[in-house]
Length: 163
Image (tube, rainbow, N blue to C red):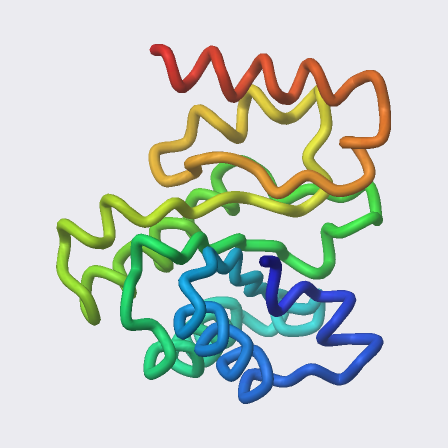
């Protein structure tokens, strides 16, 4: 189940408390949760990305009992549906921060096992450069999944997985 998606947060005013409650429900019922976190453009430009990510992660922490049932999706809100994408380096910085946060609360072994995926305007032209980053484990693909170019995104991820 996808929880915390930027559209739910924006259109339905789902805050961190609601997202945490949804994560808890998923955990209580043995469901996997893809938990979306990310910052707005103004927050990025103000240098607040890590603060925003930490606050969103801190909010779900009490609800997570089994990290094997959690995937974290970093979706910079400023890149969703805009055609803008975080550079591979910017995406890697956020993913590295997330992995280090998980290590600090659940241990290094857990942090290495949790999948952290990128979800901000992934396309056939940027998938390869994104998936080769150390801490990007996959993608949360939106609009591109509705096109014939989705195959190229899957192929890029598969090439990296088998490397």
